[in-house]
Length: 194
Image (tube, rainbow, N blue to C red; front, side, top):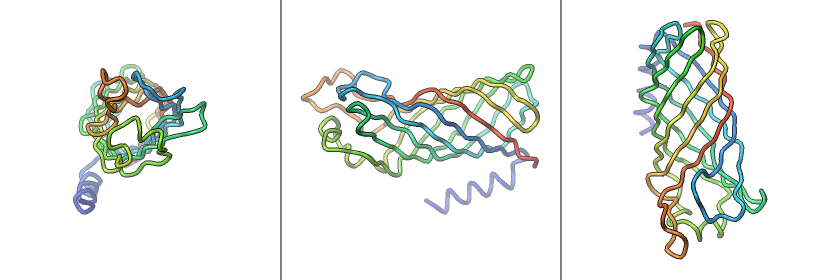
């Protein structure tokens, strides 16, 4: 698997005529109904690299890969769950008009580790203690301003749902099978002079 990812990244670097790096920081919390005691948020953080970026085009297509930390807190902030994933955005579409850009990006994520999982969390979800190596589906929106050819700053909204895990146990309300985790934040992008 690692060889496939490295070969893909090498191909993108060699073939790409425009590369960017981007970072986001913001809020991450449970967005759907849940039985967690006083749920709250944690800091969401992401770092990504994108390829085939042409910000001067009215409509642009690109792809990106990155690493991401999301999660939630509970019990008045005494407990925090951090979920780390690698993600791939195969179809990033953007529209730029007078340096204002709006972007939509669905993504597929692979959760490679999690921390802060307690017995309380384990009671709420099936298979929660084995949350590592699970697949997420998500989407992200960005709206911002292209300051110059190199720098972009904007607002971002990032949400994900697990294809496996995060399911209610029968002794709790089973009306909602999947949880959505995400929130709003700030995004900064630098277009590399390639």
